[in-house]
Image (tube, rainbow, N blue to C red; front, top):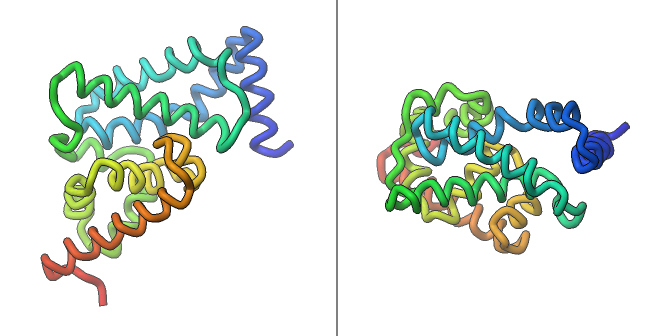
Length: 188
């Protein structure tokens, strides 16, 4: 059975009240949601709390989920993004103020971040540079590198067209390239 069909089956089971199916969805997505949230907030305790809230929201809202567009992952990460935004609103600060910590670097998605960091030669520099991107560009880069969503899925998370996501990604990569060129870190 394909991965998408298996996930659709699990979602239907959760919608029917199957707790075991919910646990499987939780297990399948927890690490990537936690990593995405941690890259946003920087503090492991906050990331744990927000991730917990995301999965409570999923359980609460799953009856309203319908298979349209980019699917369950996009729906899940839209909830995660909204919960992160709510967290910052409650604190009265903007997302751009978040510092990237060592804990962020040690998360499960590190392999994907490492691939991008090789070009920059310094992971901390790369993550600091990502933090200097516009909010939308940063979201596109994190959803692509940390969560490995497709452009279509990212578009659904951010309420943007696939073309707009491609443009944001292009501008983000150009901005990152310029930041590293300005620092003399561009690859030859």
